[in-house]
Length: 171
Image 1 (tube, rainbow, N blue to C red):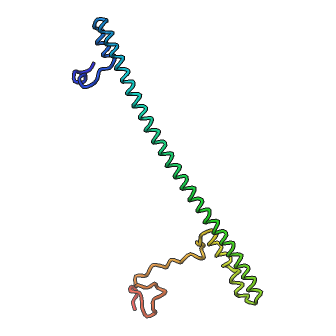
Image 2 (spheres, rainbow, N blue to C red; image 1 turned 135 degrees about the vertical axis):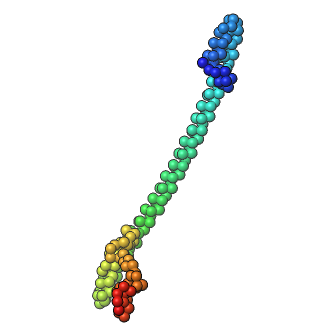
């Protein structure tokens, strides 16, 4: 059972209305049921309109997500296509560079300049195309050496003048 405050603040259900009218004579009950039927039709119409509205919102959200996903996929495809063209260009440039260096090495070698032919056909024939084809130059031999941190005296020990002693050693 509900308290009087709750019954004033909430709407009575159809069953509660019908129970109240059931205590009246049959003519009044018929009128009450007709009104009850109209109220139920209105509630049904409101519920259906609310469901249609929610379905429309859900469809709009799904359509927007679909458009966003399609735009993301198209952007990824364009990015992949640019990367492919870049790597293909590097492959062609590496081949042309290697073939040109090899041909130049043969021509210069036949001309009598073996040292220049050796430079063209030597390590640079491998190193330069690797830069173009693989797009990297991080081989151990080409990495920059990290200098040692300076000693407390200012200069590293191997670069100190012979007359300057570290501060912690007596002269």
